[in-house]
Image 1 (cartoon, rainbow, N blue to C red):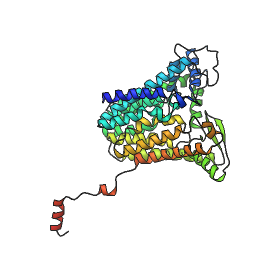
Image 2: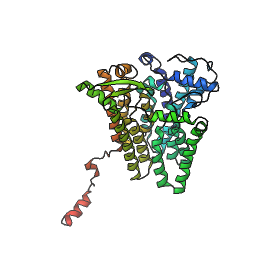
Image 3: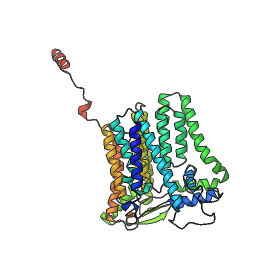
Image 4: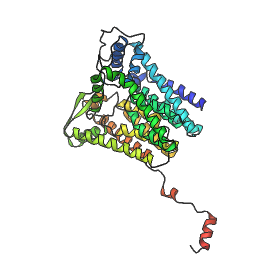
Length: 423
């Protein structure tokens, strides 16, 4: 397993290097200039949420400031939009590549714990290693590998029996980006069924202590700034790449439905009749899918296979049914989905790869064609990608066994005894 993981690491670094060249290096839409600005301000003593507004949670701040160490610009210098220093970009990409390698190592530990064969583990790790090629350059300029790595620390720690460390890591990951919180109910059910109730109380205390350690200092210094960062995220409108928005764009092409695009909350959002209602419906659908996942896990055995299935399904549900679905959200999926084994794992991996490729077919190369002009091909790719994500969620929770497999197989001796009994 160590050899397989090492080879997967080499493959990942090769994929990472490849997406710096050729068509991958064209038409970038990057967030690193914004991260650089935050990092520079912090390096010169400015306090986030107090001295400048920031929409990201406190746990994301290290991903912004660490690449700026030793190469920050003047505190008064305002970087031009979409301009990033070579040193900052290099350091940021190095940090993200390190997070990707760490996720590979953690996934290898989880696969070994689950009893995967060398062939199965090699295939899963290889797919994770080529994620940069499948998803494209969006992975280079977003910090999402940072929360993914921390969330994987939490999942793997719980899987191997280190629940306290796992809940602490989940608390930290939730303070980076909100999505790891969907793993908390699953982790609680795991501890409830396998440990004592007192252990669950301790684990929850550790989770909230980690979350408070990230939020509390800033909440004391700048409560309004922290609340603003939270309210901005919760109040985001229907983003153009979400399932509901992509469906409305499809209706626009088929029946001439009147829609338009408005910018705000760090994204392009859909405006038009019914978009507000669709956003509410999607939020309700997202919550319902999460509850279904949590109940499904609670009603069965708390073993490693069901734990990883429920975790993957929860993350997929959060992405697929949310009113916001940015391309970088796809980065969250791979390490969790690729832990699934058997025929279900093959089907899930196939759908995951399809969703990655469909994302790269329009982002970033045709993004503005979709966001402004609602181009036919990009619109089709976005809608198909969202439908594939819904199919991925269903695959993770649906029983794939056929009725024939569920029927008991009668051995010859059993058949003879039945005939002698007159049956």
